[in-house]
Image (tube, rainbow, N blue to C red):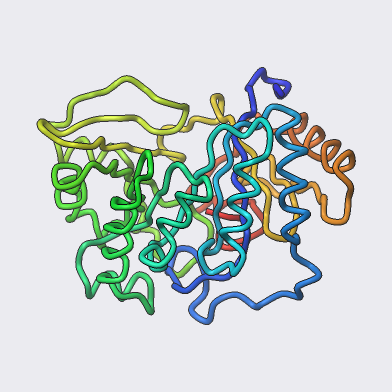
Length: 315
């Protein structure tokens, strides 16, 4: 389905939980999120029904997110049922990787084709700091499990953080020489957390740090793609602040409590929990028809107007 600006909306980012087994400083509070009542969240049946409604309008790609989707007890059942929805051509998942050693092969068997692993640093002490409770070795074991499970693509998501990991750009990009992975550097979005103004680093700092990067053709509306000479994978730069891509945005989001967000950074939401498939379809139609032209000004002084922190929307 096309929105009023002619953008073809084919991609649904589907949050299955607000809970997480880490406490990343730019994403959620140190104490985690308050666990909500079970009846306030989408059931598995409602989640699958929502995907069917979205697919009937042209959604072809679904990404399972959270929170951390792999802490969801029925994540394998959800993945298998979503992958089987007519019209869904690609099922992906974003994870911190901690539970991939136990689940990677089962996720692949359930129909997940691609996995993104969040990894902001290769320094154990810095990893423990940014996640508050995490162990880098667990994340690296998860990454290796993903590479062994036979996914069509494995990507690493690294949020650029000034004074924290901007000195690790060569090391993180160098993972594309070690493994057949794509490393995507993502600009920090002003969505709360305990980070300071200086934490924002524009994506172009990657190009300045790695002048040997070679430009590749674009593959989708979000990431600018490059490669290091002789690398097995690609380097991507995602710049939602310094190089906006709103005019090419092809996605909508569904939160774990059943609210469609046409735009990550705007407050508008369209509830669908408790509706039948026809009612859900109408809500998806309304959300797409009211998708804004752009997300508005974003900076430390002009933070996101999402109305939720990232953990309550879906990464």
